[in-house]
Length: 303
Image (cartoon, rainbow, N blue to C red; front, side, top):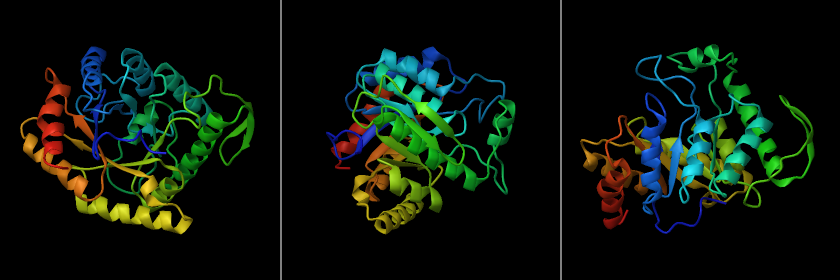
């Protein structure tokens, strides 16, 4: 199952990163976006400390904020792009996500990723964040194994009345999850990532695959990663068309033509869902600007 059947071939979401911003800053963007049918979904992130700017700046916790925004909107699909699998115990995460799904009346998309892991080289912002909140950084291999186990637990919480689980990292006894999710089977599962092993997990479990696009990654790289995903799907006998291809890009207020070009390039390599991330501070009527300057012109030109 992918996101709801689209009314356009290319669908659009909006992302507000809750860093150095107030709740009111984010709420006004979401409430405006909720009134604009050209935007299908809205997203937050999942960090506990700023990744840029003053280190003491404000950051709102993702799932708590998502619950508040779910209660203030009525139409937008919504989620975290993506939930860090290391910040919450798997069954606890399942309970949190189910609660947001119920509050939103079934609008949740369950975005999930490995989260922070130990890296052999280069800057790693997860080190400071995890140390500040008392969280150990696992190896990349352990992070992937934990991700796969969490997916299993989420699926069971959304489909079984009661169950036990004996996994590599989690033991559960008599787990119940009432009320269950609104939709049979639970929310669609969006998995973010691009490594070869991550793409294997995505091939096995995801309804939606999301990857960072411009300015972080070019379309040639995304196309190459998509071919790896296709190969994993072939190896397990899954139709790769079952997985919606999604990318997020950072919009440029000063050069909307460049953002439109990025969107068209992504569409040309098979991306069917584009999340438009807004840089801070948000201008007045930021969601309307996205529709007028990005979404409508791209659709009118056939992308």
